[in-house]
Image 1 (cartoon, helix red, strand yellow):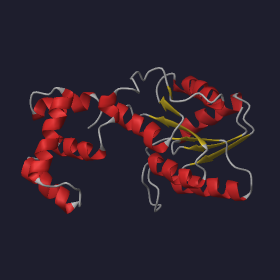
Image 2: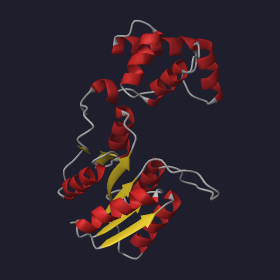
Image 3: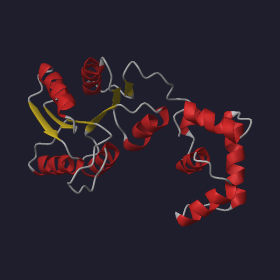
Length: 222
């Protein structure tokens, strides 16, 4: 079993439950942080001391307070940790249930498991920890059921997500173009954006923009 684990969680009630679960698994060293910046510092120091962590368990959302933060969410913590210790095993423990975002965590950030917070989540977390230790891949808690091989969720790019988000907010074609120009997102011409929207309609078999947004919401893309 893992010997040294770092837990990044800002809610005491949840962190206590997670730490208790880790103790039941006979993990020797358990450290807990409430801030992502602090978590990264601990990872760095552990590496410098030649006593690296074996596992990181992190939430995605962290509430803002008076303390200035460079890393504001679990996604950013994982990305930063990957720079210094890419081989570190990573489990996300979060309430987030959008399939696209979860798949992005696996595909882009290389997490090993995703456990959804819920009624039986601590037991699910313990199962996930054991599976990660045994080098199983792409582990999901049992309440999350979707196919990792679904190309409609893998091939969608961040550019498409930006278009879908703006469409969902009621932006028309010209407005999307202007917004993309402000953000230096390319291509930002109305013709290119319209072609992309039409491609998305074909891809998802949507009859119109409203239908497209409805489908995108069902997939958790917006």
